[in-house]
Image 1: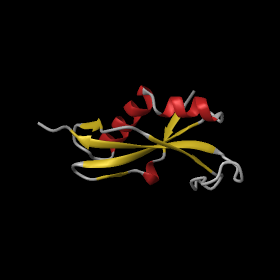
Image 2: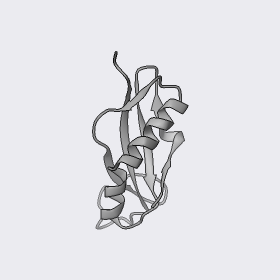
Image 3: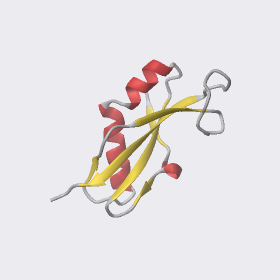
Length: 96
């Protein structure tokens, strides 16, 4: 199992952001479980810090979705080929 951060799709400012991660697992159920797990959240927090978000925290649930070979979201998995699974993980800075 392996998760990668898709840095070019990540967005953060000085208060919050969104980190995009992708699973290398091709089987949907396992990929979804991995992307909703603690490792994905930890990677998102580390990526947010690297991108400049001070003292980041994961903020809410990961939104997991399939993508095609070009990285576009798959709207109909029965008609389109799924190449990978990604998750959008919301992050925010720690509130004091």
